[in-house]
Structures are given as C-alpha cells and as structure tokens.
Image 1 (cartoon, rainbow, N blue to C red):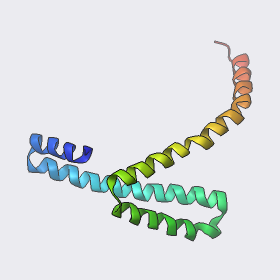
Image 2 (cartoon, one colour; image 1 turned 45 degrees about the horizontal axis):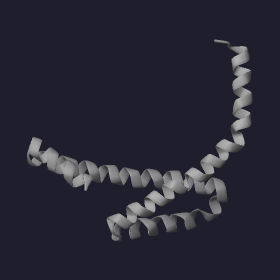
Image 3 (cartoon, one colour; image 1 turned 180 degrees about the vertical axis):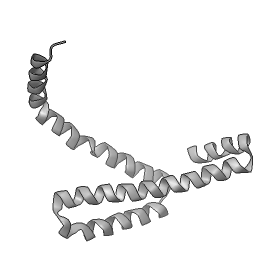
Length: 115
C-alpha cells in the first residue's frame, strides 16, 4: 500500500526515525481527519434535519468508523469511493439549477467592469 511504501522510503533515507515519523504522522492525520469530518458532517446533518436528530447522526458515524476499522481495506476504500462519487450528484444538480443565475450575474459584472 502507499503508506507502507512511504514508510519504507523514509526508513531507507532517514533510518528508523523515518519509519517512526511516517507512522506517527499517519496516525495524527487519520485522527484529525476523523474528527474534522465528524464535525463537518454533524453541522451539515443538523442544518438539514435539525439538532434534534444529531444523536442519530453521531450513532451512525461512530458505528461506521468502528465497522470501517474492522473491514478490509479494499471494502472500506470501495465504499468510500462510492459515497464520494454520490456527492457529485447534488453538486451537479445545483450547478445546472444555478447556471442561469451565474450567467446573468456574469453578464452584469462584465457590463459594469469591462476588460
């Protein structure tokens, strides 16, 4: 995997310190990522469904983190890729729905500030 290859490369260049440095850095990065996405998801969930249902989100977030730690790397990355791809759908729909507004505001801006 990429992490073991990177640890081996740092270990070859910096000795034992390089491998330990990459391992500790990966742990901190993973922990910060889990915390950051937890807060981001909680804010988004509470905006969409209200604060009342936030414990439900937290339960499923913790459950998915636990199951992700137990699952195989291929399965976890596969699920992650599917959900990241699904995030494109609302973004594309929003781009299509807001494109007339973007075109109108662009024309207005260019009329006021010609190049």
